Length: 290
Image 1 (tube, rainbow, N blue to C red):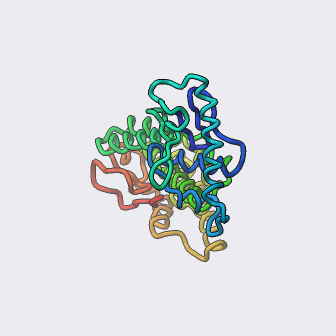
Image 2: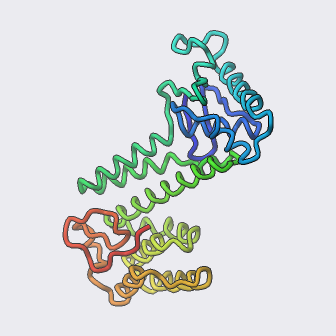
Image 3: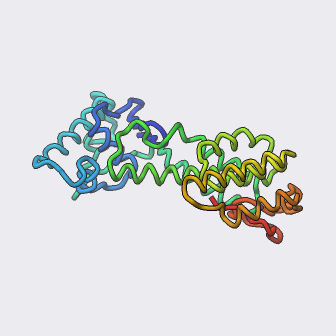
């Protein structure tokens, strides 16, 4: 069974989709898919489906949804289930004490792949191999096909998981951009960072990365415009000033400070984000953590 939740929910058994069209059975499958090969408790499924107001027939209704999923799985297996699934659909969607388990049979799970590539990127980063780190982070991000579970009407538990996954995606994206900046890829990043800055106008880390990319591309005035725009948005929306780190970055841009130059970053210095290990002394301008 292959599972994809980084975008539309896709659960494929024997090459056939087993995702139901009905809202609540789809939510049951999505919650099981987020915890593959693990028992999901009945109480968690009930909370996801009905919150604090479950119906009196909650057990029977949940069992009906499970039966609908098993019917889809059975259809995907055909008339003769494989030997490693002796109980057919019940060997895939397994009833356990207190809950249910979705057995992937060693199939691909995109969240696991995302975590695997992300971990490889972090290990490469710790080893000082920025090229490999960038490549691993890119592979992790390529697994995303849109917002997590974009086609599922998320209840309280799925909403938490979708938010967690999105935060993980944004964190890896920020790290990949920082690595690419240190590799001198600022010209290539300008379009991407401009779009991200528009999508996340209050995210100081992204705004700082855009400022640095613009500065290194010889566009100091545009870099300062990004700062002024952020300061206006923060004041208008939150009544705040930019963080001290971002204020120091603005001062460094105004002064054309040496620590912003690529030559410093190429030796392992990272003036934005503060998450990369430095091979030499840190610059005075540390940037803004995402």
